[in-house]
Length: 450
Image 1 (spheres, rainbow, N blue to C red):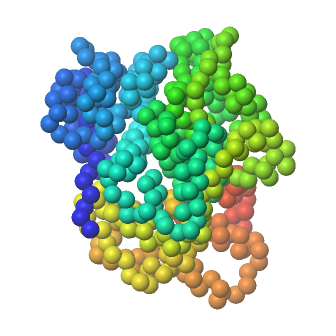
Image 2 (image 1 turned 90 degrees about the horizontal axis):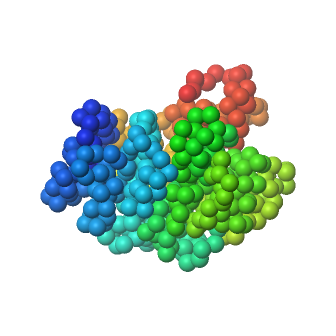
Image 3 (image 1 turned 180 degrees about the vertical axis):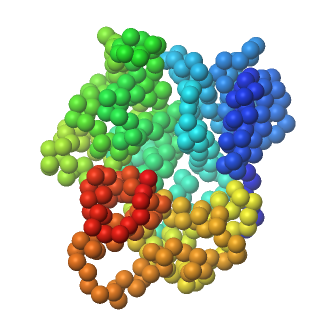
């Protein structure tokens, strides 16, 4: 397989230190990085080379970042844009998004926030190319979703129907199955494709901050609110907002979200008037919302408002025939990033992977392939190259019977191994909190996690 072309990123900032840091960090992730200290130089580079993503500062002398975005949208429609600024404001965010910036990063931001924004922007570009037919797809669909199994075909049909309507969509599925990719497919194949797609992880934002993050806040609304700031709903105006893991919302926030769904208006924290919005809402959950309704921890009226169109993303164990396609896709992706040739895979190793339960789903498979590409020296993946918990999983039926607690601990260890010992991620997959996870593992030997 021919190595894939590295994604080309153009970084534009009038501060030499910022350019140096961004170039070094992005280069460490395998991207081809070009730097420009002003918008005029950036325009010359865009005319001479194919650029996949532009990361530009907001305030620069003579020609601002907004002017550069306007030029890109007029002349380089396939190039994605991320705006970074130390002067975050409601006006700046709205202007940047309206001009065509896919991401808006206020300074200071962490490396993880930068990398996540870059990956989201490049994924959007790839999905758009596939939808527009500019990039061939090795599967029968046109959403960047890899697979041709019956469960995937059923899901794709549901995506087609959802894209034709403006109704609220609820995407259900286990962690790591690709719920956000499904939501993106609905958005980018709908009439709102040219408008923003804004994903929000409700479980990752502290409860006290979620309202201000979603709806924005006015200057002086609370301690530390030194300026007004737009929320995710305002930046998604005209497009789609994904409320990922909506099941993590508190009862109070559920009431506020219900009001938004009913009135199509949001009220910024500290404001006296509501603002009309035109946003399609897609919600996702890795838990059974109907069961949560029955337990009284999720509002029934909100559930019915969200559950207009339901798309269920199948776990990887229910679509085993797609595993070879996914292996090939991720091998080509990571080998290309490292400038390597994608390795082959032996029949025995493939059989082990086909028989594995994949508790972490596609995310676990992707992590495995990346690790193999980085660590392997040979040209073929063989059974000894696979992690021990995968190699010996096929023999589990021959082992002596164990107690329920021992069996449970063994399963938890497999989940932990699939996420490199990250206890927070493992607890999320298992549907328990970290304290419960520690308690279940305490009587048994295990390894420490993050």
